[in-house]
Length: 219
Image 1: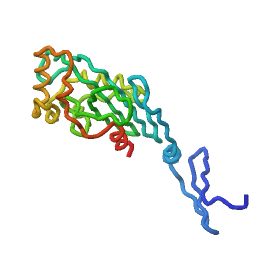
Image 2: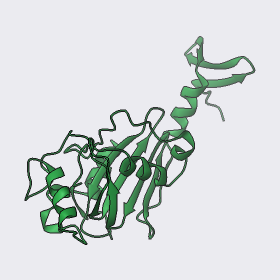
Image 3: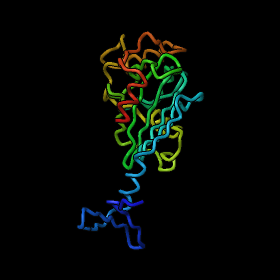
Image 4: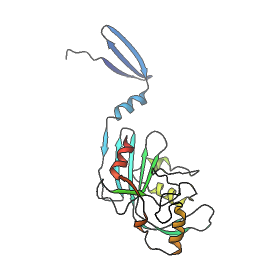
C-alpha cells in the first residue's frame, strides 16, 4: 500500500503515544489509554431486543449499559417515613430502567398495564412517592447498589433497595387520579380496603412509550 497513515498509535510499557503526520511535519503526543479504549468501545453496540423473561432488555453502547426489567403485579410491603409498620398493598406491573456509564447509575421507574410485548407499550407514572414525573428516583440517603450488582444484567438488588427503603414526602403528586395531590393517601386507602389488585384505571399516563423513553436514555 503506497499511502502512509496520517495517525499512528504506539503502545509502550510507559504509556501510549499518538504520532500525527501532516506533510513533512511530524508531531507526537502522549494520550490516555483509558480514553483510547473508550473511543474504540463507543463504536460497538449490543442490544438483546425484547426478551421473554422479567429482564426485558440489555443494551451495551460503548461504556454505557442499559438494563430494563419488568416486575409483575402483586402485593408488596412498603414503608412510609414516620410509620413503624409496613403497608401491605398491591402494586401494578412496574418497569425499572438502569443506565450506567463510568459514574453513578441513573434510574427510571414506570408503571405499565401489562408486560410489554413490543416497544410501543405505553408507560404510566409509578404510584409511589420519591419518583419524579420524569421517572427518575429520589434515593435520598439510600446507599447505591454494589459494584457487583452494577456489573450484572439483572436488577434484583436494585428492586430490593428501592422497595425495601422508606418512602418519604417527595414527589407525591400527579400519580393518582383519585388522589392527585398525594399518592400516599391512595396507598393507605388500598391497604384499608384490603385491595387485591391495584386499580389500573387510577394510573396517570406519561404520554410516552417504552421505546421513546429508551431512546431518550440512549441520547
